[in-house]
Length: 275
Image 1 (cartoon, rainbow, N blue to C red):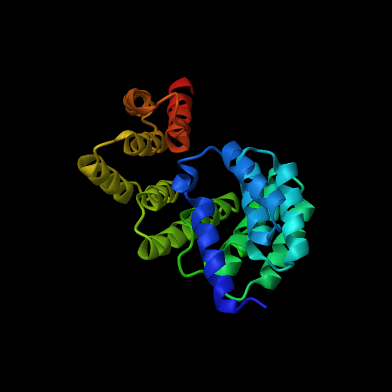
Image 2 (cartoon, rainbow, N blue to C red):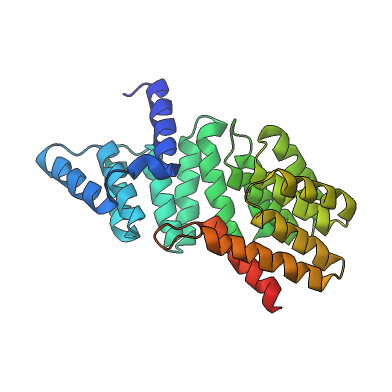
């Protein structure tokens, strides 16, 4: 039997590689799949090897092959958290939500700490959001935040669901608490959005101007100011800020390198300009 301490270490290492863009910086997923397949077929497959190949298949958007590898890993080691985590994600990617919930609950049962259970709660929250079960999703986001170092997206998820429930003030308070745990610029900007939604425009304006003054790249702050201006009925001023943000975004976007944050900001700028 593998000691519990070793399983915990393996789980944290897995999560670090699973969320790190640099983890596969030297080889493409298809090359890694080929290498892992050779190792699996030339020796005795292990849960770790099968899970890693499943992760690479998932990176290639081949969720069916990924799920097959995760299932094979779980036959060897039924409570292997990385395999359960990968399988739950593969099911989610295929919109097989009932299976996502089932596998995530298996992961929760196999977890021995909030740090291990956090990713499963987060995936359950995303699943319930897809089903528009906002209150159930909120409970799962709150459970995920019991981890020692929650992912930034988990804080954003809680605030997003609170907003869906028209609990704007609660979203503001939750993000204010989140910033105390993680002083992320992304969290701070989202918190400022909740200030605008709650009508606290003077405070929002102060934070936006401070952000503009200290930041090299200003597009996100310009879009925040545009949102504030729209809330005050200043449509022309909002369009000017959106146009300025769009020029900066277009100067930074590279066709060979995806940047989801800039892409989302670009869509927001265009929405303001075409409204």
